[in-house]
Amino acid sequence: MAIDTNQIINGAEARMSSAITYLDDELARIRAGKANPKILDNVRVPYYGTMTPLASVASINTPDAKTLLITPWERTLIKEIERAILNSDVGITPENNGEVIRLGIPPLTEERRRHLAKQAKQEAENAKISVRNARREIIETLKKSVKDGVPEDVEKDAEEKVQKIHDRFIRKIDELYAAKEKEIMTV
Image (cartoon, rainbow, N blue to C red; front, side, top):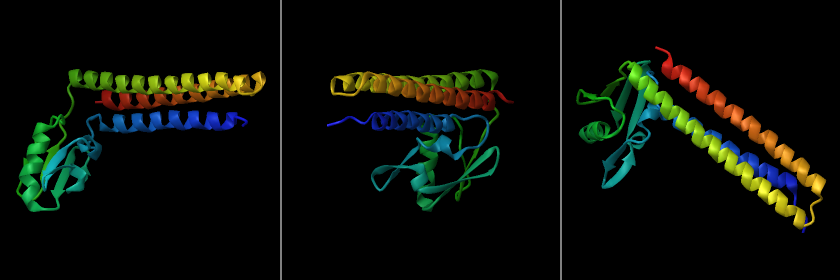
């Protein structure tokens, strides 16, 4: 059975791409002074005995850059949603008028900005580790493929392709982090 190095390379690219997707999601959850519904992604609300994501029991809108508006689909949930937000790590006190919940996004302090930038850097570093691990595992697979009959020059070419893909994804991670850091540090 011949081993297809292109298939191995495509697998590597898919794994590295999923690291970028994950990083993108994690960075979107980091509050940067602008209202973004993704900061509520980790908030869970008790709904008929099950802890349910907030987005599944209410609509979340951004009427302006500094406000999130949460409209529960069942009015009886408003107190539960308010409690869930207070108990979460969002760090914003909700305003409840009986029909909707408003979250006013406060301006970030310098210290908080630094903390969020550090958090973003850690997420970027985790993504880089994931990409490097994928590269290492794929190169090991390619080296083993030589024993299974793949010519050495084909294996070396495949290694070079994997390295180029790795470098491209590391650059992309750096770009995502730089953009998020700029967004966080911009007052």
